[in-house]
Image 1 (cartoon, rainbow, N blue to C red):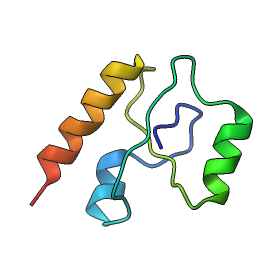
Image 2 (image 1 turned 180 degrees about the horizontal axis):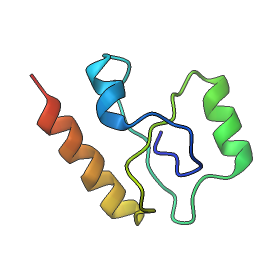
Image 3 (image 1 turned 90 degrees about the vertical axis):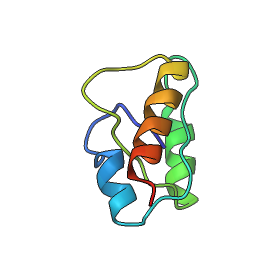
Amino acid sequence: MAWEGGGAPPLARVLREGAADSLIVGPEGGFTAEEFQWALEQGVRPVDLGPNILRVETAALAGAAVILALAP
């Protein structure tokens, strides 16, 4: 789950650890605290996509680029 709230490890590190098999991005304006908490309770791990807050469509492309770059 792409999280702009800080404290999350970079997506590339999580992928290298083998700890991710999907990426959740959006909605525009970010996730609510309730949505984020629910996701954590479901075992979703937050990840950082970098220092900038990205538009949802850009975040999806950036995440896909990292995933493809690290694919075996």
